[in-house]
Image 1 (tube, helix red, strand yellow):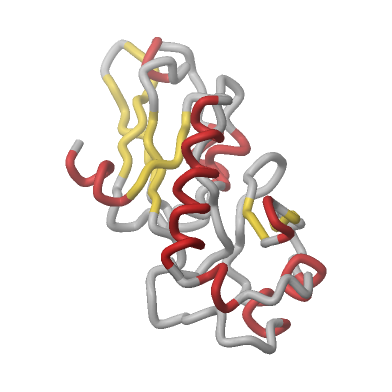
Image 2 (cartoon, rainbow, N blue to C red):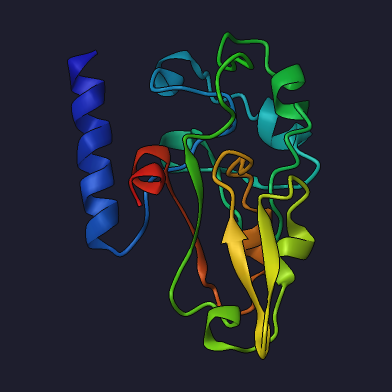
Length: 166
């Protein structure tokens, strides 16, 4: 087991050198994902949003390139292994609105609010300027819907610990 942990740490180190972010796994999975997953692709095939992909070593990864995760549980229902635990939080990350957000530059844009089914991003009216986004981290699921719709790529997903610290 120690060897696998070292391989994952090493893989993440080299990903970061190449400018790639952390490996993101399907919802409701934990640190033991690579120990439990048999790489059968059932969750990937079942995903209606097609946000699950074959990643390193054939393990499923989630990428928010065109869609966010609707948390529909199709991946959970399709998996025959004890990989998913719906009692835990779906994702360990939350949205973060970066400084280059169009609305923060006084350009009218509310794409992220329109995409957020959970109402985690709302725009408060501002006197004499376009509304500005306000992020409710407690309502954010980390589903990535806002990230895919942002025209300026100003939304990133960050770990829950980092998000609450800011």
